[in-house]
Image 1: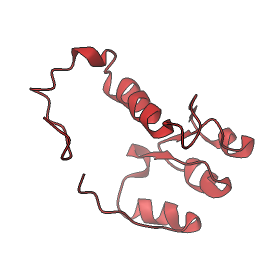
Image 2: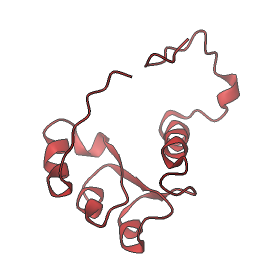
Image 3: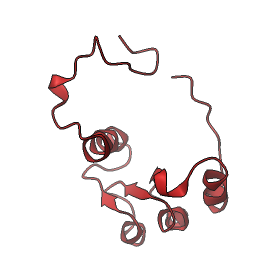
Length: 105
C-alpha cells in the first residue's frame, strides 16, 4: 500500500508517535505488556482478546478476535463504525469511493 514501516522499541513508541502525530487524535493497537505506556497517553487504544489482562486494563476497547486471527481487520471495521459512522458497509459505492493501496478499484 506504499506505507513506510518503522521498527520502534516499545519504550520509545510514545516519543516517536508524539514527534509525528497529535496524541489525542491517534488510535493505537497493541498487545504487549509495555504497550500500556502508549495506551495511557494516546487518544484511543485497542487490544486483541488474547492480550494480557494487564494490557486490557489500559485500553479503550478489547476486540473479540485474538492477534493472528484477523484482529486487525476487526479493529479496522470497528474504527470505521465508531469514528467515521459507517454502519452498513454494503451500501458503500466502491466505484465512487477513493480507496488507498493497489487493491482499490
